[in-house]
Length: 204
Ligand SMILES: [Zn+2]
Image (cartoon, rainbow, N blue to C red; front, side, top):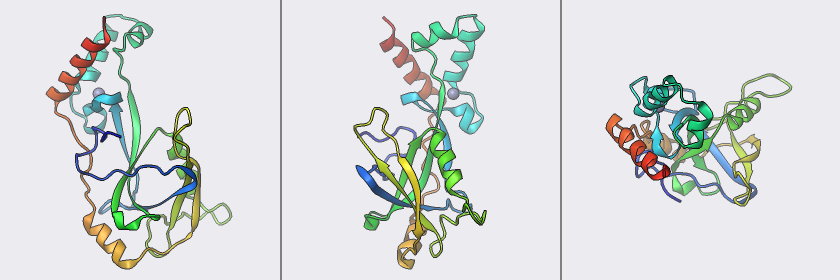
């Protein structure tokens, strides 16, 4: 499996384990934040969108707008592979509870479905209290199934574990190892180059 080009090289990536309930992960808060999910917008395999993520000029968005303004149809452009829409990915820093020695890894999943599932899971049904996912003492883990052979494999059947204490040393080490800056920001030129290459390869 290749390293995602929107995450800095060398940052360990969590690989979903195959099977029912095979994944049990603990979210860690990003430094100075209670949030544990970071959303990033990417242009398919080309990398992170400069506009949507950093409010800077993005060559792919510019080209898309230019083509659309020229009056070229959305469908035709899609067919030619020229429309590289932005898709959300969600990143979290986690500890694999089944393999804690691996330390902090980045959990990288696609789409908003999982975000919605997580939001639903984040509230206790009866009390309405918010689940303290990242609390080392009172928090809990996310447990889910994964099937690599599925047509569109993604974490399935998300659920909460019971309250589960994290080892103090492990937590402290993890928090000091946390790299807040895991996202790889491309330069304008790099993205423009990749886009040109892609368009060249795809058109015939
Ligand atoms: Zn863009």
